[in-house]
Image (cartoon, rainbow, N blue to C red):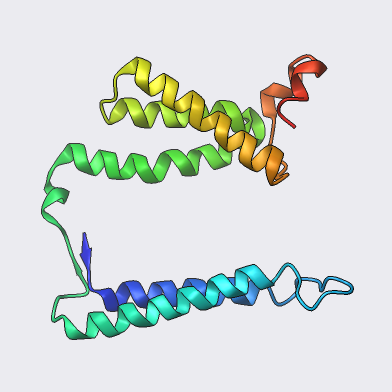
Length: 162
């Protein structure tokens, strides 16, 4: 699908404004001039500027707001597009009952296999990517990633995941 940049810019600005509005009730940090709302607001301001640039560029082009691209006629590419949207969304909903690690591993593996990656390479890439995501978000950023089924592991294994 091809869109005029004006439409993409308007959507980007709308998302940025919503993101900034959601930070209004964020608490202030005692003793600091900034708090947890700073980064989302800076990111939102950058997104608004990018959206404005897209709108300006879109006004120069005389394309329709929406037009299907040539790839949309190919069924394999339509399924690929749907999988790229559906698998991460399904993984997010499955994280709590199943757990972040198994859900992410299976999702990545399915995507890699769908895109015709050799099975051994796909498995290795999915394992490495899942491990890196778990280390970065679970350990370094201290995001409480759901463990799901992994809670049934022996306690000495859980220390590597939390």
